[in-house]
Length: 213
Image 1 (tube, helix red, strand yellow):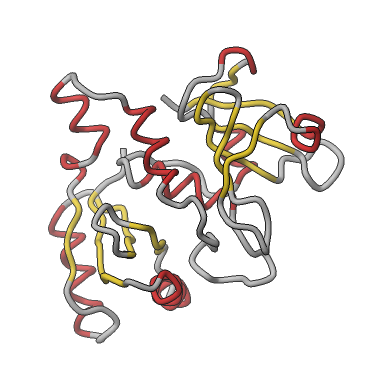
Image 2 (tube, rainbow, N blue to C red):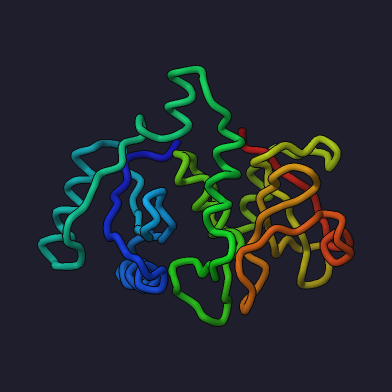
């Protein structure tokens, strides 16, 4: 599970959230932007063992005038913990709902590298983090960390991997949403979208799937 994190900002323009996350990243802070349920774009960062440690980092950044108001996100308030405590809900469905928030927008991980454009691994990592779960940063690390899943046994929330740069090296990842489809950030110049696993391009480059639940 993800520890205590810090949430800042409330932007109506996603570009402003991306730029703010990029500014924090340039200072060595692992920040990411996302579309909040409120309809505003916000930024989160941090993975602390205690509330005091998270608050301490936020207050230090306030003193440096890097952030203004902040909110400490507690792990016990996460989707995964809420479902665990209540025994109600479907974490896999929640992951899909979270990923759907990014549909139609040009997802750029932190805005740090225009050459790389849309960051597929950042998209799925943020989706997991927003539900209280850790996930490795790159698609290759994600492929190595998960439990292998056969294509005919895929379930919502599993990740599907592809070799889009030739050969058999993992270079792309998406989140499976059911019915043979997945959500992903295709490439620079394309918005986050839903694609079928049976599409000729991705079927040819499919390398496998992984589950983390």
